[in-house]
Length: 181
Image 1 (cartoon, rainbow, N blue to C red):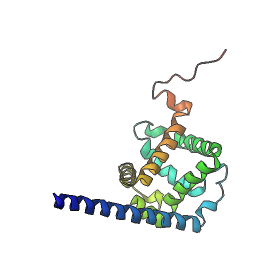
Image 2 (cartoon, rainbow, N blue to C red; image 1 turned 90 degrees about the horizontal axis):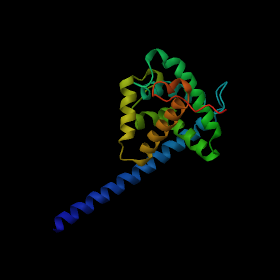
Image 3 (spheres, one colour; image 1 turned 45 degrees about the horizontal axis):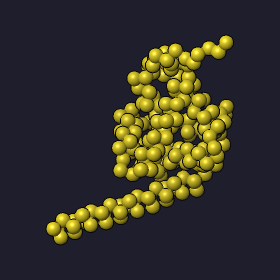
Image 4 (cartoon, rainbow, N blue to C red; image 1 turned 135 degrees about the vertical axis):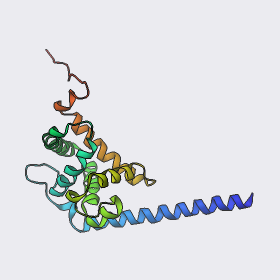
């Protein structure tokens, strides 16, 4: 019985150590992203909040998230509308939520954090669809709540922006809001 208790205590202790090291690592990586100036970049031309690197990152991730929901021939036009919708959503967020979302993009865009946390070691446009899907699956199923929250944030931003557009309604059978007379 004591052997089982010692084994459980060792596993719990190992888990706590791993959690502490992971949290410290993520904090340091996030700090490095903000120290390199990612957070202070201005919004891209024609956008309210999204920066150039955010647009590049999302332009690669969104088609993977929308696979099966958007026809391939409509992906480019849908992508532009979705990026605008995400930008408008971010502009309406509270300052704190906007800051947290931009920190997520900082982590995804900084080469020091992107590789270790996503498995995408090169620039986003060079990443294969398989590598991006693997990153999304890895974050979705991670033992680290921070990565799961990052996945959920990306997914919610993407889905709200997509399904908020009238062009997406027909695909899911939504006739649109009722007309007020």
